[in-house]
Length: 217
Image (cartoon, rainbow, N blue to C red; front, side):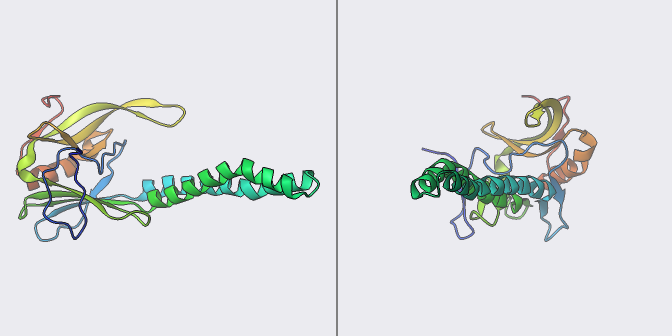
């Protein structure tokens, strides 16, 4: 039985959630920025530039693969004496490219239009992670203030890159729950870039922030 609950805007009050499935993103620079305050809440909104760049690459690659299909069909039709059998054979060979290409376009659009938000509400005493895009429905997870046992900055080695991977040590802002599950807020290679966001989260939670030197595993 899964212990992860997803909510929608019209759902009943959230169940106790343990593992984080939304917003577990580690990068060399902070992913979130502090939005203008509203009604004493702290809202962290994703900087969507990276999502758009990655999504466009997926869409361009998918479109290129999808275009292989008519090119292969025409090539087999031409070289096979313009026969129906040759065209069918070309279609069968190129169909996987078309399928993968279309999936790439859809996935790329999802990535390019994805927005993530973390809302700290001291009145409801909840921390709500939300994710939405133009392809999938809204997803959200809500963590209760009372579940957060520790707020810390934790150094973690992370591999970055596709073909040529490099290992960097990132400073990760984490919330540790009373059941010792780790919820990631944000990360950065330079701790100074993460400092304003970490201070804001510590203030809204009214918790002390454990620096990397004293944070325990």
